[in-house]
Length: 124
Image (cartoon, rainbow, N blue to C red; front, side):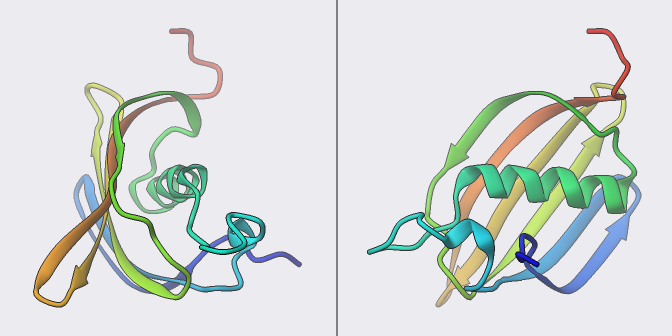
């Protein structure tokens, strides 16, 4: 079976916010062929994980309706430990996410953005 999710180290959930500490194991399927000389976690995997964990911990709707304000700033490399912060805005039906890690004493922001989610049968 191909591994697609990181190792969850710990998580906290409070109201509409979740924070997860993840180890992005080097044997995750998404690293295969992306890229041979400099492996990095593709943005599509980061978005997939944000939606997956938001559904699991914040009970968000499952249908992806679009992205806005997305930035991929620093690559996530194999075996990195990152923090995924998720905030669900029920009124706007928007999920904000951010991947960060500590680089020495500096907080590195790997990716951030907002996405619109809805029930699978919801009309826009």
